[in-house]
Length: 561
Image (cartoon, rainbow, N blue to C red; front, side):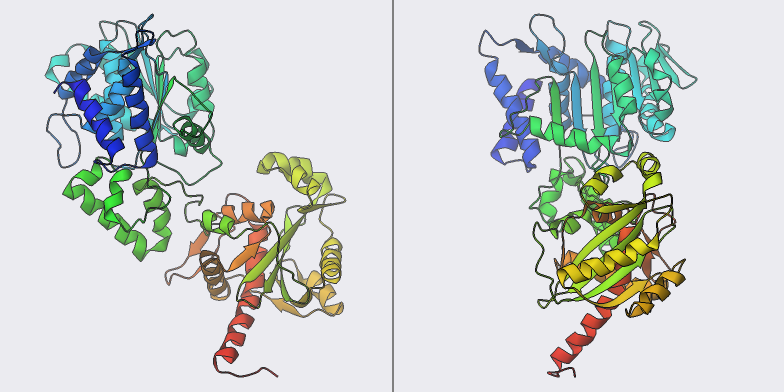
């Protein structure tokens, strides 16, 4: 069986279900097989260069594995790796001979030989091209950029046939015959990269990149190249605001048969768990791990990672993103699984007239975002929550720039009140609480406040006839309500009105954990504002307590007097 036949058989096995794969992996194989069928038509503008595939296969076999259980053995490309290479390098335009694919997006779970494959792609392009190539490896930081570069250096140093054919100095590999170079870059290069003329650009672990600056600089420099290639390779991430998730959504639509989006110059390979898959089902792990899950040591590694995630729930985010390749909207040490939070959102809130309401207040600094949250204990055991925030009108434009969120739109849509002047006048908060309660018939039981900078506010509210409860800001007070509120969200027992400010704050919130595994929201290490979420936990500290007390009475068949 020649190499092309081997790739075709692999793609057919994936499509037919003989090889377990996710839906997007299957779609990539179906796309390939459809293209192979088109080759029989004389009008097809593409050719498949089998000789190129053979050259790459032989190139890879010159090197040895540098890590893992096969370290020291010759590299023998797996069918999965061969499929990727066949697509990227072998589809060519019949009239020009240039490669069809100018971009490639590859998303794999960790430990699936991503760095090794990138190293082979880069060194092959540098050493065997007839042109003078500029090959750049771009991570967000210098350390990340050096991972693939070091893999390349290790591979070529161990290959006797390449001795004397290159130099490796000052963080730059140069092929002596062609003058082609391989160089790692990092985010600092966004300032100096405009002068580069890359032919091959590798964007490593794109999910870590906070902006698309490096990508933009490199792709703009490829304009003059006849045969450019940019390869994005990454695991899934946990911040859906970063450019990688936007790219992930776009490339997913390219291989979606039901999407009108087409891009014949973009190769896509995504290996992930499908939405309906159970992470406890070992048979589906291969969907995200087409290499790791094919040998026992790899499966044992995944079992160990899952056990750690079960034992310490805070590690589950890492397991889902790094090992199962699932996008999870949750920061490191993040407090709330955001997919579960969003699932609790409704377009129409239940009728809250006459329902007991607990008000949580987080006054923060007068020049910053100040928030008030309302929590209602419903008769069916759920909690309904609402939130509103306040920001000084004079600082609105500045805060919009520094916090990089659309405060002006949130003011326009009524989620935030812009108060006159440069500081928040707490009288606006008092008026807002009173007005909302009167207008909607809410029965305010308690106002729960963080005592920091709130003494006068609490006294004023108490003088208005409200019951005031001080919520001390420490793990002894906040751990139980913080855990309980998250449990309610996970169980689908919270309902909210899709307030974008509260959702933003909930996504920003990270937790602080002490040695007894008590938790609380960590304002100090939350990079963005969490005031609406903190106010909500203040409210829940009391709403939860009363709800539990009433449940005890109900279980005992007693009626409260």
